[in-house]
Length: 504
Image (tube, rainbow, N blue to C red; front, top):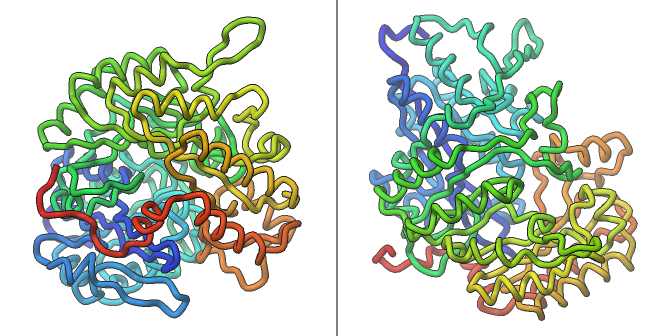
């Protein structure tokens, strides 16, 4: 593609599809594309963002978020019509499509095929753990380049190649592409100094439209609210087998993304200033390990007090970071940390308990929860006493989980609900591509017959397990209904925007 001008980039979130039983439609709006847009803009490239679920001001809500199409598998497609998407991409040279989540594989694939067939000369890029792990599927759909790691440098290198008037990407770092019928992979550059990252381009999102919908990627709001996602660090010290971080180590195709890396306090302040200027009221923190460095976390929370944000945690606070040693090997709830989080504005935390069986936790969850030494019920009560709403999160359907261990998880979830957990998430262990669990399932032939990797989600059994899969699905639905109040269930199942016209 030689246009005689700088390439124009359109970064896209695809339409969404959701289960009609659970039903909560959430625009994606995750941070990856926002960092890429910031990187391109910093190098003076023309870039826009389109969320095809939400649309933009050129389309009514009926033509985007309220355009809901039943799919043959019982799910519902939410978002812009194919012809509308083609109109939006027509003026751009490079189309980058988010490929992070396995559950959205089919929607990303739909958009890629649509654009590739209508505009064969446009450069189509994708990235994210899911695209990296299902390369052949995405290449067959029409993708030209897959970014295999953090891509702030990669996207700029691609832009520079095009700016120079050619399409030879053989020296671009951190990409996979087909060459002579084979997939070639170039090693990535992992950014260690997060202060060098661009400021995420939050302003390129259809913010007011998203705020009226009030469906954050990391939580639920009950009224129209000005919100965004943000992070202060990258990486995680744990290696849970069902998480992609378990394989993102030194020497892997992605590079060592697992290593814990921090933004400085001053950099976090700079980002919060940007959000304040945008009128943001709610910030959902997407760090994988927000409290890994407690001293730093406390400093950040003290700094955040002045902004007056309402803060929510997205990926879950590792419970090992909410206990403190009180001598003689005894652990107690870290009240100082919870109090500091409350003062900083945290109104919601997720507690990833994961299982009621210590054997399961040790085998599959890095042993990051100690059910004997951690008083999780007390953690919930203390958090509630500071005005923090707690969601407790559990997984069922581990390959060798027994009926007794399943019962232990349900009993523990009920105990935590009684202790004050505001709601309970009860979902399936799923072997998503790019995880150690996926490797084990493929190696041991544990995938259920008829299940396709691109159709995996966390609401249905996908593995051969000791517990009959039909029973797991029954328990996940009935247990979820029993452990949550009717208002919560009604909110989750609502397919329509909940928001009034006025935005908080």
